Image 1 (tube, one colour):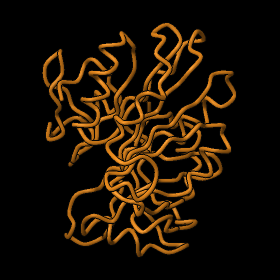
Image 2 (cartoon, rainbow, N blue to C red; image 1 turned 90 degrees about the vertical axis):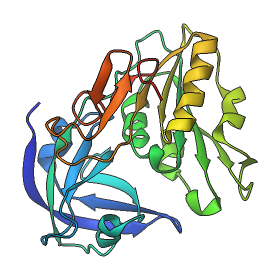
Image 3 (cartoon, rainbow, N blue to C red; image 1 turned 180 degrees about the vertical axis):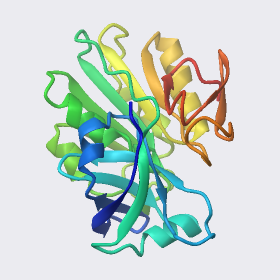
Image 4 (tube, rainbow, N blue to C red; image 1 turned 45 degrees about the horizontal axis):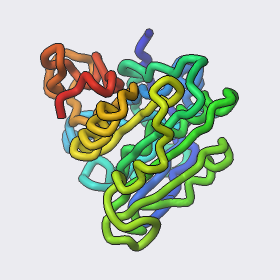
Length: 256
């Protein structure tokens, strides 16, 4: 797939919760080609600090491209200041997309921790036309890490929430919600994205139930083209790059 590097105007930059933001930019070329699970690489500043681009999963790609992010460092903090009309230097779409479920799949379960929810709205956009049931299990640290998720609801997703402190939803890790997963290995597929410990728990659950799925890995990326090897993850086939071989891997393939 061709990688597009260009400048695109910001359409909106909205704060969704105390922790999360959604930025929308006008990139018709990316809208036409991006697939669920892929990401874009954004240069957030023209100066030397920060020097490297920042990777962001594509949250949605309809009329415009949307990214979902948290202000956790200097790069994303700069991003929160972007206004309508500002130009973004964007490279993308990049990475290996999700493998979509077969026609035999009746239940699709998306398991996300924190910012790991970012690749799943575009996935639900693609899958909503199917007759399969969509389930989102979401885990956050506090109520500040939870937002209304109204677009997921419009796509027909059943949403279950857990927070570490119990300030909203079930108290505890997202694994407390695993009872919501239909455990038929022939008709259920799992997708997960989030901290390694969370995805390891999902992997163990899926292995015990003999269920298949995919994991989208989140790693720090410098080049995002598979050249620097800085985002390598350990897999059953040796080390592979998150940016080029992934971000989407078979769930049982990654060694967390």
